[in-house]
Structures are given as structure tokens and as C-alpha cells.
Image (cartoon, helix red, strand yellow):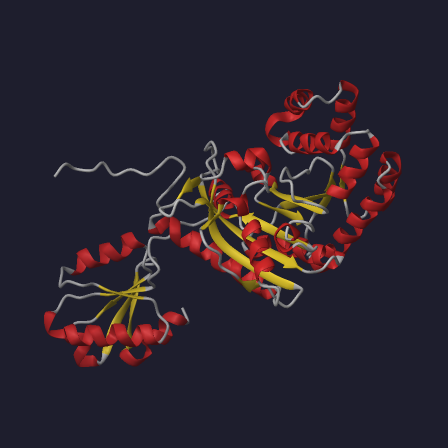
Length: 434
């Protein structure tokens, strides 16, 4: 038999324990934050009928979709995000009590060009509120976003918010058609990647006149801290003819600030969100010390999407964390600590005659809530301690004939190099309280 070369597809990765453990801890933290705000878990399939997904993300999104015929000759696609599957679920389950607050933490797939912090398979952590047009739902989503980043230990971030209603009002005043509006939105959405000149070229390609292009770019340059700048925001609203939708956005942000008073919110008209389905408030979140990674948490209101499946209007608003991009940014900032093991202790196994007692000790420690490794072969003490140190296990429990006679074990702190004798019945407590 010929040997198969082991390799992964471009844009796909394996996660060894030292990478997966901090990822899993992040997921656990995000889940806890979502549940603290009363969101409930939902899981949806990897595969959907292609017609469910296509036509919802724009032409560019459709091109990036993994789509194929299955063995039953059905046209299927791998989920591109978690929002469209949510819309389908809500349409299929009319009995869901609303407002319905759901979260989902799952992988999605996009066949796009890979770059730093951007992959073809990646996790999204979504939280959405379905069934209410209340601006307090939008405020909760913004506050949830801020709270979740704080729970992850991130201090310096900014949530930049805009509204499709503001965009539509201003773009409409320029006489743009619906198609030109969407072309302009998709172009402005790339301003962080392409810069002003690159976006100008995109607008020209879309057939938008030079004088209109200049006004669109000037509009996108508006960026004002939302808290404490009411007078400046009011002037901007008057000058650009977007008083009412801007006042609505400011109300949402001020409500969010009451829920998350330590967060920074900015009204930023460059935020466009290129997906077709947004209808109201939209936002993106950047880490101030890692701007090169772009937005790590974004979302907005989409009141018409579910109606594509249900035939009736069902309002919704939500947020999504790009877990892999956020993790890559935190690694760059050295805010993530690699861990090689989930175990707190290693029980050293160096005396075959005491094997039954090692097994009993492992069972007792695990029952008490201590993550425990038992070395599975009788081996030299030095080898086992080296193994535990290399794995990052903090404690080693040494138990031999002498310790058995005394009814104690030696608990060695491998990080500090200290050790003490502990009665067998007190080992778990001593480790849990350390």
C-alpha cells in the first residue's frame, strides 16, 4: 500500500490541545455571557438546500459558497453564516414564543482568499433577538457585545454603529437608485480594506458619477463619539438630512450605554455591512490595539429576512463574533495563554504493587472535581515529572511505600518546585483551594 501524504486543505486547520484549550475556554466564556442575557441555545445543520442560502448575501456571497450535488442529486450548500439558518428555523416553527432570544456557536464555510485572521472554515458565535421592533432589543445586542468582550478580558475596543435607515435617507437624497444604493453600500463596506481611493474606484466601476462619489466618501468620513456629543450629532443630522434615523440610532446607543456604561460607542457612517438583508441599526467592533484584524464582532437589524421564508414580516436583530479572527488578534496581542493539558494533577505511577491505590486515588480526585491524569505505565519518577511539566500540569502526586505507611501523599507544585505531605483524604481539598 502506498503512503498517503498527510495534509490539510488551504484555509482549513487542525487545532492541537495548546490551541484548542484556549479556544474552548473562549467559547465557554462567550456562551456564559450570552446565557447571562437570557439567550437560549440552538443548533442547525451544516448542509442546507442551496435555494435556502443563495440570493441572501449578494453576488459575492453566492460565489464564496461551498455548493454541490449530494448523492440524491439535490442542490445543497454548506452554511455561509448562522443567520439564514435561523431565519429558516423561525419560519418552520411558528409556535416559538417571541421575542425569541437564541444563540448558536458553530462553524461556517466560505471559499474565500485566505489571509491573516481569515480562513475558509471558521466559528461564528451568534446571538439574535427575533420578533420585536423595540429599539431596546438593538440596545441589548450592543450591550451584550460589549459585555462579552469584557468577559473575555478585552478592555480597549470601540463599537462603531450606523443605520441602514440613515444610509438610505442620505443615498436617496443623492438620487441613487436601489441598485446604485446597494452597489455603493458594498463599496463603502470595503473602505477599511481598500482605503478612500480604492472605494472611489469601486464606485466609478458601479457607474456612480464623480460628484456623487465625492459626497458618498465625505459622508463615510463622519465619525463621532455617541455619548456626550448630542449637539454635534444633531448638527450632522440636520446638515445631511438624516435627523430622524440618526436620533433613533442615538437613542439605541444611549440605551446600550446604560446597560454597558464602560463601553465606547461611536456613530460612524463608514459602517455599511455589505450583506443585502440589513434594514436598520448596523455595527462593527474593533480592537484598538489590533485594527489590522478588522471587525471581530458585528451585526445589526434585519426585519425582512425571515419573511422570505415565512411570507410575513418577522423583525430581528443580532450580533456575531468571528471567533477565529478574534482569537488571532488576541494571540497577536499576547492576551491568550497556550495550555497543553486540561489536567490539574498527575498521579505518579512508579510502584506496580500500589496500582489499585493509584486507581482509587484517581477516581476519588475526579469525583471531587479535580481534573486528574494517571500515568498509565510504571516508569521512572524523573520521566513522569518531566512529562507533567511539559504538559503544563501544575501538581504531581507522589505515593510510594513510605507514604502508604503514613497515610499521606506528597503533593509537588511543579511550577514553584515546592512540595508538602498531605493526608490522603485532604488531597482534593488542598488542590481545589490552592
